[in-house]
Image (cartoon, rainbow, N blue to C red; front, side, top):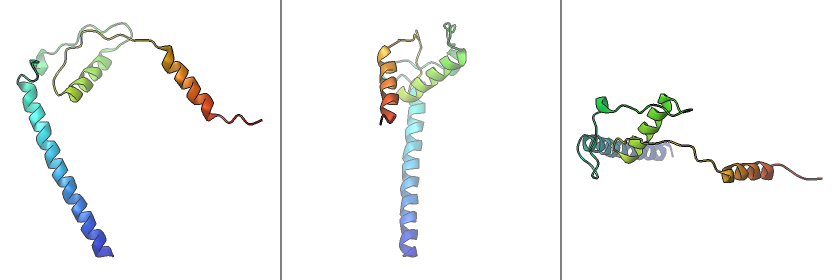
Amino acid sequence: MKKNTDSQISSLLEEIRLQLTSLSERVALLESASTNKTNGVAAVPAAAVQPEAPAAGISEEEILAISAALAACLGVRVHIRQIRLIGSGAWAQEGRVSIQASHRLHS
């Protein structure tokens, strides 16, 4: 039984190695594509990217984090033009409903 487990572990490790190789190739492809034009969007060198003046309540670090998350998701650098908070009472209501539903209301 131990030999079977060892062979399963070996096959899983091999699958992980193959997936890691595939992911490495994809990352290299995305990095090379970000230096060229991709999807009609011209890539901008990192030195040329200057974040705009932070809006009230949003720090420069938060803007950089949002920009990095978008770049990681889309595969290209993005230019953030505007960040604004959109308030919605629906999220607050859903949160209250969820919390109230988790309470036991037995009398």
